[in-house]
Image (cartoon, rainbow, N blue to C red; front, side, top):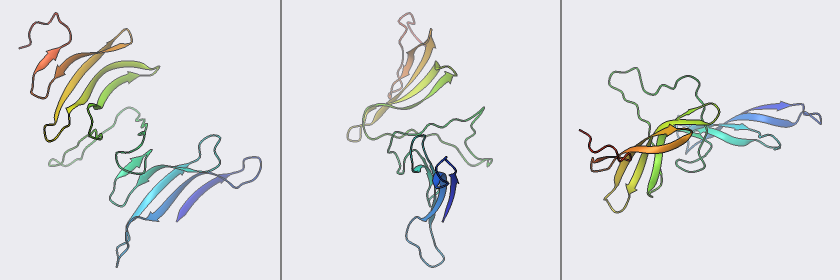
Length: 171
C-alpha cells in the first residue's frame, strides 16, 4: 500500500511531493509476510519521488542507499544529542564504520560547529587489508586556526607516536 501526498502546483493537483510505501520484502508463506517500508520525497525541480530511506524486513535502516555499504551515504542531522544503546544492563551499543577492503580512513568522529568550523577528530584507519594480516590504527587530531592536523597515532601493534617532534617520550 501507499500513502501519497500531492499538492496544487499551479497547474494541477497531480504532483506528488512525498510518499510512504509498504512492500513485500521476501517470500511470503503461511502466516509469514515479510515487509519493508520505503520513504520517498521529490527534490526541488524534479517531477517524481525518489527513495530516500528504507526499513527492510530484517529491521535494517538504509538512508540514501537501497543496499548495505553502497552509495554516497547519508547526511543525518541530530539536534542536541544522539543516544545509542539500550536500557538493559546486559545490552551494548556499537557504532561501526564499514568500508570495502582497501586501505585508508574507514570512518571517524569529527567535531564541527555551525559555519563550517572544524574541531578535533578521531579517525579509524585500515592500514593493511591483505590476506589475513589486517592491521588498523587510530589517529587523534585537532584544529588550530581552521586547519586540522593529526596529533597522535596508535598503530595496530600498540605503538603510540606523536606528530609533534618536541615530545620525546610518552609514559
